[in-house]
Image 1 (tube, rainbow, N blue to C red):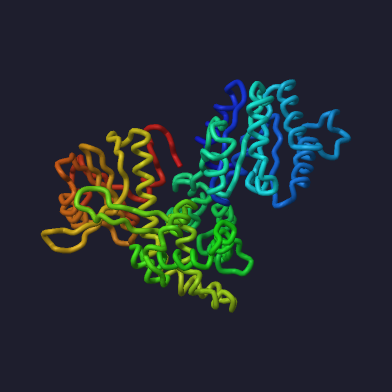
Image 2 (image 1 turned 60 degrees about the vertical axis):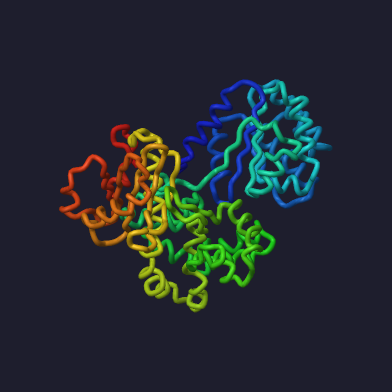
Length: 473
């Protein structure tokens, strides 16, 4: 079953319906669902799909030749073992597109092809500027190497610069698409399963094989046969040259070191040397830097692990390696992970709540069109102590602030009044609204507050987006 990616599919279809040569570029980190998206798009279309691998240039040309022969049988290639050159192959594709209407050529994992033949981008440029320009060819280049795709395909120094007609950088699923993988799980477990998988489609598919969150974590993280037990380390080895040092940085952040000097101290290096490494992790989407939204916040940003699967892995797996090797998977989950899972998930819940608000803004359920989204932290001058606000949405004249509680106790009026007090620190004359998210619901004294500027959102509401438009999850 294909879930999500409706916007991306619609964009690919929109360009498919336009006449003339088209060239969208699709990229994103491993397991994000690029190949699955392409395959879904190609259904029922006249197309050639080719996935490059770590092979020689000649082997790759032969592989594309075979893909053409198998997917578009033709008398001209019936007895052909391989095209003599890439130019001959591209010329034949131009001929096919010219005499048969729209033709899609999808080259997956393009960086492998470029590694085997460094001139391939120049050859594609020549084909695009030459015979392909006036055909109905629809070229898709796809890759998992983020830096390669952004610099060597989309970058100004690339021979292909300016040729693409569209680009799609795939992001993890938002929670309201991710939870659809677990329709039979309790609501709490659906959200936590989404959070542990970080919204990555492949990981969600793996978890979807199990009847509960406990079984999924056991099967994929805590058993030697699990697909995710070494996933983070493998991805680091494939994408980065010094995986051990990057692992140390991620472990430090997962352990609570969020300021630059704290991370440097934890990994045993100078702060000035971390910028390069943190930049690479940010480029891969594994780390993000946050600065407070609103007036009076800290001037300096903090770092967090942006990929939730990595955050989960580095929070729990390193300290459990010996137990896993001993075969104590169930005890490891029940005694080491489960008791701390709610605490870890608190920050993930904040991001889920922000996705809920962004959905409401995008669909007009929240009328204000906020421009800035994030958190706030800073000093309360009256109490002379640090304060935080979980959610802050802001524009020139409006402010929405919120708190998120992933606890088994219902939220009462005292939490709201505390939020009012903190919001006053950053209000700066703006029209103010409040929102409270609660796993366990709300007390009667809070629900009894009749206020137009306060929204209360429980788990049921998170699973029921925009009733008026019929967009049920």
